[in-house]
Length: 458
Ligand code: F0G
Image 1 (spheres, protein in one colour):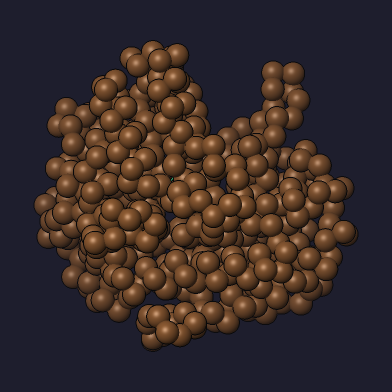
Image 2 (tube, helix red, strand yellow; image 1 turned 60 degrees about the horizontal axis):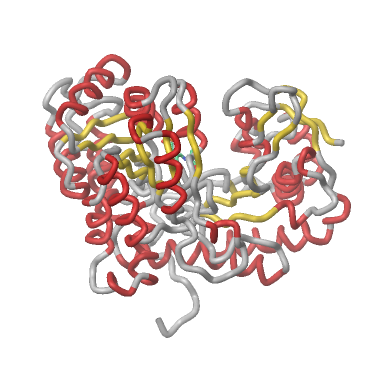
């Protein structure tokens, strides 16, 4: 590319206003939300970087496809369209449509899991871990050692530690391992990509021990961009071919289509094994819906079929990955500690290093999400000890592996000027660095506490 401006590869045909607020209003809204941005009404947020999930802008082709939705209970045309698309992409013969990713997780991990079983992953996402633990199983994260290195330019920090995987399987016994899950890209591990070489190594180990190998593939198109640009053996393949190569190594795939499906709702479970698909289809029908729609309407399935094609377009993926890096590299240049290199869907700030004066049990990440909202109306999410911290048997605080804040970028929604504004907000947050204070938890539920917890400033 001869030009340095990252052109959004689309024109805007329909717009949605965002509302400005004053600093006093934001301080008031934050107090009303108990200092938890999940509890803020969205019209009080200017730039919403809470998640890239279900927040995409659909294309005119997708909106047009929705009008073709066949809403028949059984055997709808839209199901055929959805099936053909997902089957072509994954190469798996059994496709179960679900309303979102965690429904597919509940069905698969609920069935494979249970008391005494183990799941291993490069890093379990929070709903993945919750579904596994809810079934009575244990979820163990095995990220590669480079994942902890936030500074070096290593290409695939999302990889799994395969030596450790082998050791763990031997130590708990292969019969007790319910599945190995590779999350691409590694969301809770900084949005870092996973290489095809690592995927192949994990697949080989699973084959050796007869353990099901599951891809959590909600950002597989973004992951394919990194493979094509960082793993020399695959530069000759298209992004879609790379994704298919990856699916080809797995026994099953769980997808939250709300990410790389470029839609606002949807998920699927794809399986190779017929017997497993029968058991899971029963659970699908009991808890989601009949096998040819599951948790989706016909029009959803039409929009998904188009989205899963559009997401692999080279211009789109280039814009997507470069614009995330634009935000990350610019705030890094200001001196904000970020996970480097920048991942695909989000920029992850190391709040522990940004606020070294706030101890981990006072949640430096929560301090940063509150500061970003107060300063500029920017909503982000803590991925640290609020989300993953625990208490031991004596009720003592056990911190998460890291104290991060995620700025997730919705797909095709914000422009470069929105990102320039966020960069300016960070300049102000840096100026107020010393004044930032920690928080204590005033209320928390037993599972997934970050969604609904209340906080009080210290
Ligand atoms: N797996 C991964 C890697 C995810 O990032 C998510 C959702 C899920 C599974 C669950 O899918 O939300 O459709 O039920 N991640 C969102 C996020 C919520 O903000 O990262 P879901």
